[in-house]
Length: 613
Image (cartoon, rainbow, N blue to C red; front, side, top):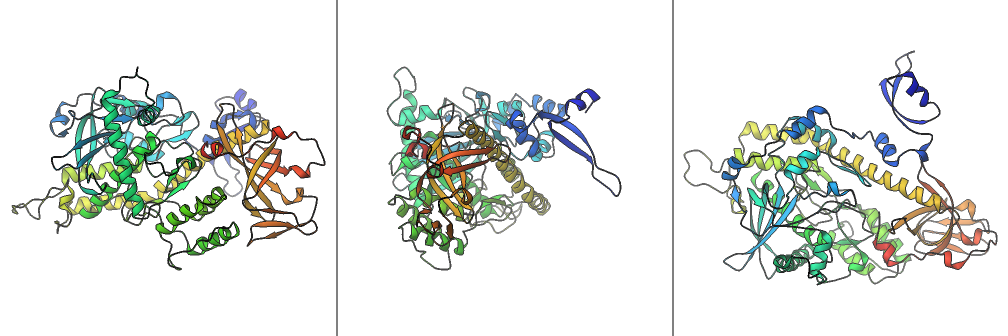
C-alpha cells in the first residue's frame, strides 16, 4: 500500500494481495495490499471478489486508451476498395446482455434479397474490427492479454476500450466497415448453394431490440412503432431461419431443453449445443430474435470455416469431441431407472443423431428435466483448435467463430486470417497463368492445387496461431469460471436471506454422502433462479440410509423410504456458506415436527425451468 494508514486499515479485513517476491530459501514472501475488499466476504463487493480471485484486469492503461481514441474516422479510401452494400435494407439486433445499456453493442447485421434465380441471398455482416486493431498494436496486445469480455452481472470487463466498441459497432445511419458472408440458399429446402466472403461497407437502416423482433413475429407490434418496412423482411428471415434449423437437425444436430442462462452472443453457446427453453416445443417459428439470428450466424461461421479449410489457410477452428461411450452407457442405465429405454445405434460410437433421438424420447417423459441434465453431463467442452475437427453439438465437420470480434479475441484472429487472405492470397498458380480463381467465393473449392498464401506468410501465421491455442482455451475457461463464481455468490446471498424457508425441489444427483436438490427461487427483480443445495446424509436421522449407485438412490434400512434421482422432495434451507457458495438443506420430515405452512412451498414450475441467471 502507498502509506501506513491504508495498510493499518487492512488489518482483520479481506484484502487482495499482490505477490511481489515468492519465498526463496530463508527469505519469506513479500506482497502488497492491492485492494481492501471488506471486513469479510459478505461485506465485499461480489464483483470485486470475483475479479480479484481470477485476477481480471478492470482498467485500461493510458497507452491503450490513447490508441483507442486515435482510431480513424474517415473511411473514404476504404469504401472505394470494398464491396458497397449500403443500398441494401440492413437490420441489426442489439445484444441484450442483461447489463447496463452502455454495453448493448451490435457486431452483426443482416440483409436478405431474392436472386434472379429465385433463391435467397442472406448477408451476415460482421463488424470489421481487424481493420482497426492491427497485429502487435497496443490494442491488439491488450485484447490478446484479456482474451474476451467477462460479464459480471451489470459490470462488463471489456476486451477493448469503449471507444473501439463505438467505432466498430454496427450503428444505424452511418457507414461501417464489415466482413460480409453472402450465402445463397435454396428457398425451398434451406440448403446452402454457394457463398462468398467480402470486405464490405454497409449502412444499418434499423436497429431492433430482441423484444421488438419477437413482437413483430408474433403480431404484437404496436401501431405507433414505425417498423412497417421491416415486418415483411423479418418474417422472411424467420422462415429462412427455420429452414436452416431444419437442415441442421437433419444432419443430426440436437437441441437441449435447459434453463437458458444469459448469453450475449449469437452462436452455439457455452455447451457447444443449441439450448432452447422447454416451452419452445416444436413451434414452427423461432420464438425470439436471439434464436432466429443464432441459426443464421452459425451458418455464416460454418461457411467461413469451410472456406478456410478448402483453401488450406491456417485458421482457428471450434471443435468438440464426442462423449465417451462409457459415460453415455452409464447415462442410459440411469435413464432406464427413470422409465426411459435408450440405445446407441452403434455400441462403440456416440453420434450426434443418438443425442437427437434421446432428446426426442426425453420429451415424452415426466423426468425430462433430470434426463437432460444427465445427458448434458456426458458432453465434452468445445475448444479452440488450430486444426479442423468435428463439432459434436452441431454435427459439423468444420466450424469456427467470427461473429464477435469486439468481445472475443479468437473471433478477431479469424477476421485477421481473412484479411491476410484478401490481401496476400494468390489466385493462380504462377504470375504467367491466365486462369484465375475467386478466392472469396466457394467456387474456388477444389480448383486450387497451389499454396494460396506465400510460404513465409503461411508458415508464420500457422506458427502464431498454434502458439496461441492453449492460452485461448485457458482464457475462455477463466472467463467462464469467473462468471459462474459471480452467479454462485449472488445465489448464496439470496439463499442466506431465505434461510429457514421451505421449498419443493427436484433431486438432481445422489451420492453416498447425500443428495442434491434443485429449487426455484424468486429474486428481488422478479426473476426465478435455479438454486442447488445438498441434503447431507447425516441429516436423515429417521433411518440408516444405504447408497445404491446403479439406482442413483438412498434407501432406508428400516422404513424402506428412499430418495431417488428425479424425485421431488420438500426441503428447508438450513445454512449458507457465502464465500464457498455452499447451501445446506434438510428434508421437511426431518424438522422434528415443526409446523410448516404449506403455502410456503414453492413448486418447481415450467416457468422456473425456463428462466435462469
